[in-house]
Image 1 (cartoon, helix red, strand yellow):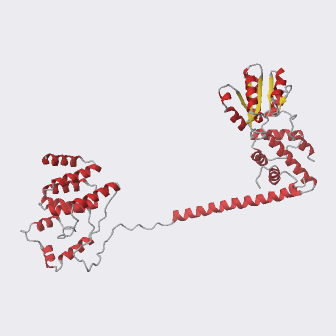
Image 2 (cartoon, each protein chain N blue to C red):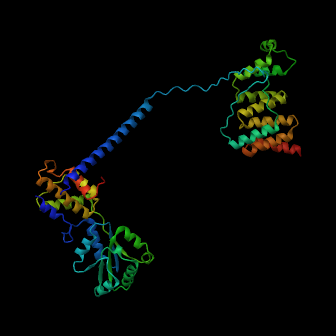
Image 3 (cartoon, rainbow over the protein chains, first blue to last red):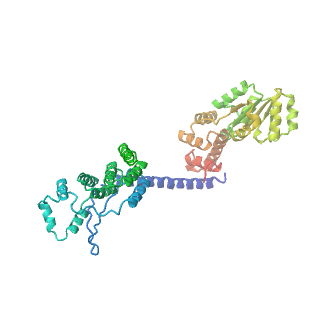
Length: 231
Length: 221
């Protein structure tokens, strides 16, 4: 038993090692719990509302070109679809000019009718616009300050269509499709506008593009009708 | 002071039979088996050789270093027992299998668990019905019972607490040979401490158990 004291020394060393190991694990555990408690009890900062106010950028060189920032929602459509649609729009439709700068977006629909009807005299609000020395600029700024919603654009497009102003209706349709190109109502209205302006071929192509990626019974019927009429 | 206990836990094939559940089960299976080729398997130290020695006291147990001639010499008896059969080469195993197929001789091959599995995977064993009897390690309760019986014989049943038994079982993992070796070494260390008047280790404690484990290589330093 000459190695008794050597064994005893090794035993002590081992115990020390174990103590260090377990205490470090314990310490780590305590730290983890502390961190967890800190994150649980930490007051969460209130999330600011997502109201993006677009301030107009000073453009001294090109004052007539309004900058309209539009949020494109790409929730339900795949990237491929978005790309295809963008390519189609670029190919078939002339570069989107800023939407009719005659009205601000929150204007009532009655106002549109009045503007569209040149015989009728505009009311007081419109008068003030007339007196404005730089009306286009002002309207641009209005556009920039407003958040263009899909519904607004669609309603305007519809109203223009109903009044027979297909060119303006197309413009608003394009804008609406930029905001949400999933909505079949825009595509339908756009196709109808194209039909009215004598671009049935383009309308058929447009509907086919949509139906390639999305299913819509209404648009299918419309396409059938266009094709039957063509034949 | 503890010489008697040290002797008590010495590893020997002439030891008294301590019948565990697994031991009894294996014994019964050996008794009832009618197959000419029987495999007694188990991890080292579970008592395979001990079981064979006690169950077949009149049959010579051949070692793994045997040759074909050694087998032929023993063909005058019906039962041939070979210990550590995992060491036999393939040709010899094939020879044993052929002899067993004659139904004249019965072979009991004792071997380690892992090697036995490899041998049994071979084609000529796959297609045959072989009796495989496994001897399992003893349970903690059986170990406590075994140590206590030995201690009682020497009037020293108060030496271990439950915690110490747990620690011994943790190190030995139910290996019968290790248990005997462990307790023997522990008593050697205790004996040294008492005879040298080392007060700290005058009783069995966890440090003495750890020291024993280090000495037997069961604890990584």
